[in-house]
Length: 409
Image 1 (cartoon, rainbow, N blue to C red):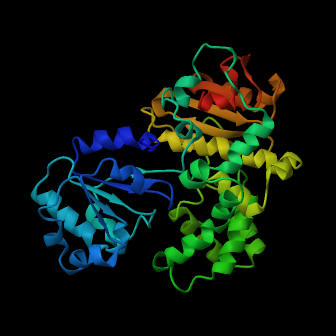
Image 2 (image 1 turned 90 degrees about the vertical axis):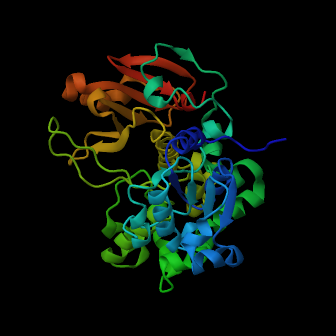
Image 3 (image 1 turned 90 degrees about the horizontal axis):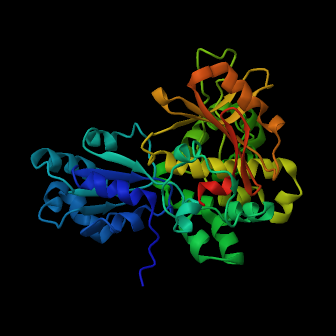
């Protein structure tokens, strides 16, 4: 029996390899990059294995020749010269489906990747969405769900506790699909520490892992909020410059994902600060020591967990949505008006999203969406108030209350 769980990246990878010579898959460790890449490869070299990597370190150009293609070069960062060899091979024979490279997210300005510019198409893989975990169809995307005319209850909606338990399970394939109880908790609890040990060459031997751990905990406590670098630095006992380097490092390792602020000339006095998000809610819960009982008894933790969960689902599918929404947040400088998420569809307009851990939202819960609609006029495509109740219904002109489970149901 094939236990492989299809990912949204599979269709895109197949399409790319049908016409392009090379693709690089990036993302956090243990998010499923290698497992998915193996489905599309005819042969594999694991470059983190010294025996397999020896030939590529000695002469990468010769080592690439006469191998069955598509050739998967797993953990390419363990042997950076392989990227230049791929570039030269592609320049010599530019045919479709030659190479797949996989590795953890790395510095975008890493000189090792420069030869791949214009030759490697990049695909990012996030932890699994619940839609993927449940093997549900990948369409429609959220940008297609919002305009739908259907109203009424959705099938099998979770209650609030159900949403919290789903979020705390997270999306890393092993703990989400295979582990339970103590094994699942220990996997998540040890993730960041093991990540730093394995990626020591990437992050540098001089890294203070203890300080970074304290910083990540402060960051996790601020998930779904606007925390300044200075605030996070003070919580971890470091300076602001170190805090910025830690944010960059954690982003490159795929465990945090700041959301930029949205701007438009139709709205004035908007904040420019990014919104902080841990990339996986299982990791978030483990880092702050939160189980379902704690989250359900703490309104602040509940709101942050549910919003982080929804954003992680939408971020994971955004790059596969044909409309390619750019996800941002919106808040004025006075803090009186904010919209949790703005999906900018370019010439097609913008979608505003509010996220509430509430089972029976009222029109007043959509006041900020109504402000956004009235301010943007025709550019406002629609607004969604995503909630934890079972029903979809209209809250106002172009504003819908939609259960969160519509993202996978």
